[in-house]
Length: 308
Image (tube, rainbow, N blue to C red; front, side, top):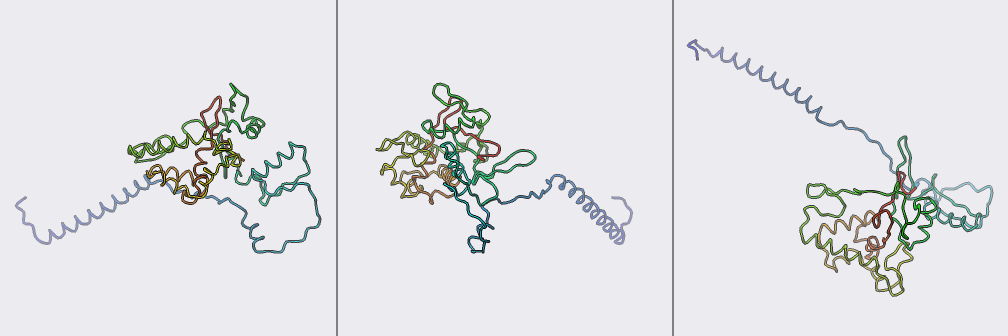
């Protein structure tokens, strides 16, 4: 420090100048940092969308018993099909194939397809509902004939159907974020404890056996279509208990396994496993036995527009 006398007034002025410069620095720095954060922060886009579902307005006309103008004419048909979903369209296809043309398909919506409805934009088509199927069980002749008709099955090799490669879904099918890492496949594996992995293996082994199990009537216990499944009461009684209860009885308690099974139930049935029957839960896993000449067992078929 110099020997110059430093008075109180000088010190006060020094503090004022220092405070001023500090404040200017903070403000300037704040503006600069705010500008940096804005650049780092992604822009928020207002992504618009619509909820597609049954026509509530038309449904309310029936619910509220709103007066509908009397019809001006009457038309009679031999067969009337209510609804143009997959079931209705399949019924119409069968009638046409069997020489019946005197039928009509009625639809409440302004489009056909039901739960397999789809939309289109300037880029492609896209599904608004059901969007894939598994390859056909090899004894399901009606389904196989349909897939041949629309050129999804192109020919047969060594007695097995050869599927059009354009419609097959290739790996990876799904990825799962689990324990802080991404893994391939939907069945939990990365970081899963040994006992949990064993329970997962045991369950998958159980349903693999059920896939080829037949009831006392010679039919597969679980099959597609559902009405071709066995009527053996020892398996049908599973329809009287919940899938959750069944799993507890079998000793399955792994949180990883139960998450996976619950996910599957919500995906296929729209309900958790405590709300569906054990028969339905097992059917999801044990009813598909399809084999192909050029694809893995139970491979997935899909299209840009889904099943529409």
